[in-house]
Image (cartoon, rainbow, N blue to C red; front, side, top):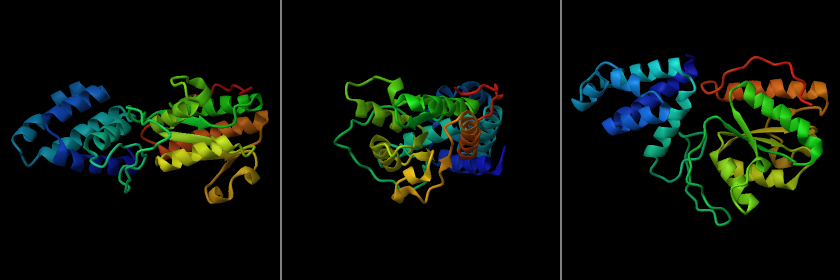
Length: 258
């Protein structure tokens, strides 16, 4: 386990000691798929029931055991705690420790769903010339265990912007392609930033990036075979850097994304 994950576990343990009862442990076990480890961990529930001094140590121990066995579950635990004990409204941000605002949008309906820790939403031009780019993005996500979804992959609402808002709301990370200065992509990027999402911008030319966003690091790519293979590798690396506890690299299948 790396130091970043260790720090997250310590912070989660403090929150659990402060907030959890026996029912919360049962819920967390069901959600994470680790009920057996929680039930069988020595003295965890007993030390909680009796308010023993070793309860925090037991909390840290069971969290470490679960995460070392299944690193992806760290994000699930973070999400559960953030949603279960956030008293300021819906939790949708990738940064649970940051100051938050509560707002009720008029144009969209807020979906009654949780953030999916392995969902990547893609906002990009939907024309045929970007099909190979999307395949490269999808492959990059698959390489590190993320599901990749674009707006035209879903049809759950009669109003397309509601589907887009719901997708961004559910996503852990949003990949935006500014190539061609597409106004829809600019609008969708604004939604993602407002919801506190981790946004990864890409573009074929830095001239396509709006001035207000030029201070962000952009993954620049060329729309040819070599360029898209490079985009796949660099995007997978970026996802792994941002979410080390969630991602895991798969074997490169050597496919050309065309």
